[in-house]
Image (cartoon, rainbow, N blue to C red; front, side):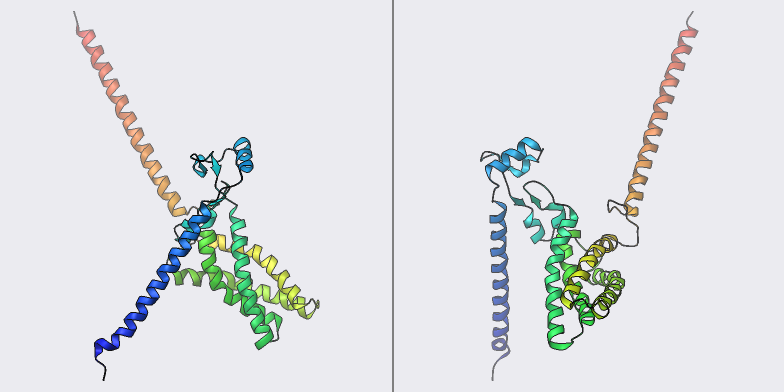
Length: 271
């Protein structure tokens, strides 16, 4: 018969092993990222960029002939502090957000195709139904990938953000499934080609859908992604500041007027 302490030892040991493995993996990835971020562009590229454009000097190594780093900001993405679209710089330049969305989308398209292939060749031999299932299943991957690469942290909890993303994608899932059905059943396009065609136009539409709903928290956002609540707060602060400045100006004007009047009265009262 084993005592309770003896029964706990294997569980504690397995947990310790898991923690050690996770820590080791994290350390290795962090070192790889640090090594990548220390790579520098060829000297000819650095000189030409220096001559033609104004690149922030923080991305040049002043201790080594002002060489330019090839890529920076990966560490912030890995630790989840900022999305790649905001901090990753390639030879000193931040790529457009849509480029990061395309990279994120391509990664998730691989996951979607794996789901599609598994269902099509093993379970359901219907391309349109497999498209719908694979698209629906890939949203979980897209949600995480877009958080780290494109749009940044979730507004609210993880599950609220995921549900919001599913709701935003619900219409495009239905429309794209109908489109895929027409392409495969009536136009007689091979199912893999129809899959690619459907994927191309849905990717473009998905970007604008996500851009609208990702930071939605009940308040509208402007073209720069700033919520109306934030704008109203800033406006209120500006209005208050203007009122304070105006009051100070009126006070100074009143004080100067009073001083001038008193000076005039004293001058007038002299014999």
